[in-house]
Structure formats: structure tokens, C-alpha cells
Amino acid sequence: METRIGKRLIIIAIDGPAASGKSTTARIVAGKLGYTYIDTGAMYRAVTLKVLRSGMLDELRRDAGLVAGLLGDTVVEFRGDRVYLDGEDVSEAIRENSVSREVSFVSSLKPVRDRLLELQQKMGAARGVVMDGRDIGTVVFPDAEIKIFLVADPHERAKRRHAELAGKVGSAATPTVEELEEEIRQRDRDDEQRTHAPLKRHPEAAVVDTSLLTIDEQVARVYDLAMNVLEG
Ligand code: DC
Image (cartoon, rainbow, N blue to C red; front, side):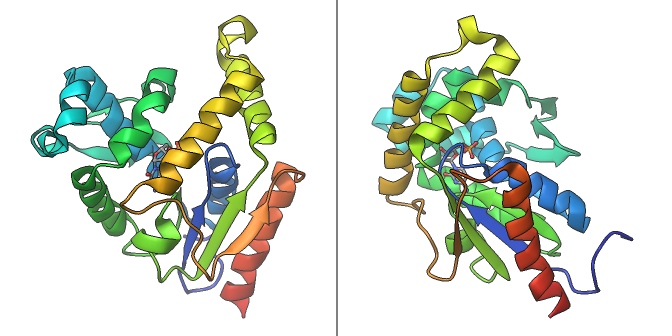
């Protein structure tokens, strides 16, 4: 692709907690490099949507092994920046609060992680990807040339999420900043404390605190790191 810098293709792994700015940064950096952007959170959300629709959530809480049957031949794929679950465009549906509330539980299940890990490693096998999530630098691609760990103050993250939701559904339908902050803190705890592939910084990952950074500044930090590797 013409926009690619140099001949070498690398993997950029961006991990961090909910609403830390990962997706926005990853998408823009991928665009600038001519790379593919892979939002692994969207993949966990798609599987969560499937679980919710199946009505099996409570059964799974009692017997996690049952999820294997549901995963069966589940297909999660990206076409451009849209996410498809078994051929259906679920890009909007996976952002609903019902999904956000249960995604930490569903993504803590080992069969779900094993399945998505395999898919994600296939998607990045040719390199030339920016992948964001919770365990990309630690588990999915520990050999990623660039590993970033984005962090941001929980209150700041709640304010961002609030503005984003208010823009989409209107302020009346949007939870308060305080409610969102509590949800975010809870999700951080769940993601950090789970047994399989918890949210954790790889020792080599560069920490970028986005609390006081604009999107342009976040993008510049990651892009500069990439250029150092690609031109170095
Ligand atoms: O990035 P996000 O908030 O859309 O991710 C939703 C959830 O998916 C997150 O709370 C935990 C899970 N997740 C994960 O376990 N591993 C990843 N690589 C990405 C997301």
C-alpha cells in the first residue's frame, strides 16, 4: 500500500483500561500508517451480544463451560470499520449499555478468550496492524514491535464517555458522570483481577497518560514511536 512507511510491517499493540482513548488513537495511527486497525474490545462485545441474545447469561454464570456450545461456529469479523457477528452488522448494538455491563464477565471465560485469541493472532499474522485491547502486548502479540499502555484518570474517562454518549443518545438518556465513573472503576477492577489474561502492563510497554493530552497529542506520541522503529 502506498501510504505504508518503509518496507517493514510491524505490530502496534495498544492496551489500557476502558475509555482511556485507545480506539480513537489506534484508529488514527492505523490510518496514518496505512495499517489495519483491529478493535479487540469490539470482538468481546460481539460475543457478549450473542450471549445476551441467547438468554443463557445466568446459566453461564453457574456453568461457564456451556459457552463452548454457544461459541460453536460463531464468526466475528471486520469489514472496513464495521463489526459483523455471524454475518450481521452489530456495530451499534455492541455499544449498548446492556453489553458494556456484561462484557467483563463474558470476556473472563476461558473458552471465549481462547477462541478470540486464535482469531486475533490470525488477523495480525501478516503484521501491519494496530490492535487495541487489554492483553495485546502481554498475550496476543508479546512480540509486537511497539507496545503502549494508555492510562487516564477515571473521572476524566467518565467525562469523556459522558460527552460521547450524550452526543449519541442525548443527555436525558445518558447516565451521570458519577454513575459512569463507578461503572468504569468496576470494569477496571474486573478486567485487572480476572484469572485469564488480565489487564496488565507488559514490562516493555511505554506508558502514556492521556488525562491531560488532546487526541492529536496522543496520536503524535504513538506515531513518533512507530516512526522511530520504522525509520531506525
Ligand atoms: O475496549 P472496550 O471497552 O470496548 O472492551 C470491552 C471489554 O472487553 C473490556 O471491559 C474487557 C474486554 N476485553 C478483553 O478482555 N480483552 C481485550 N483484548 C479487549 C477487551
